[in-house]
View (cartoon, rainbow, N blue to C red):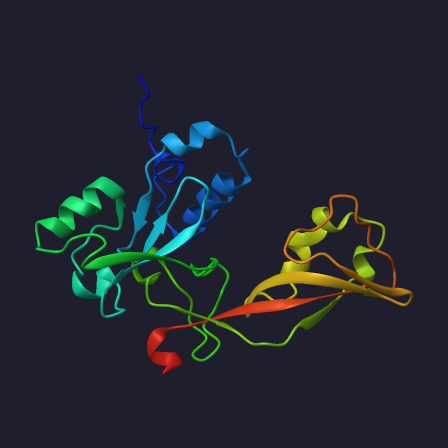
Length: 211
């Protein structure tokens, strides 16, 4: 008989945003095997539903507000079945009164700072965020990473934009032409001296700062 595994996000009991970030990274780096479907989704801060593949879904009421906005007493971590009971006890039904909407990577990284006020986030206010992505790719010079595989250097490359936001490389420009790879970086891509990566930068605002 199949059993539901305890979600990986809860196995480590994250006590900080950095701890949550590590748990989510481990979740997303695992092989995409069928057993992961047995894990129940986790609700974080009454704002995010994390499924067994690490996808982030917003937990929204019909009026577009977060479940956390309506019910500030909601626990920081809940498995999905307990969220359903929590809401049902308050007269709210999943699908008709509260829905999940698949977003991007909206949970701010632990190093991120609000572009407006300069303050960061904790587990307690991780729901208070707006992700801002401008419709313009930004450059990242790669000269000091020459000779290394792009995948091996990506974490250091992303630090170029910290604490402003999260860098999502899409292309590499070379004198002889442009390498386009979208969101999937080729495993064998080696950085040349004149390479410049271009991609979108996800910046983050507190909701009050954004408005």
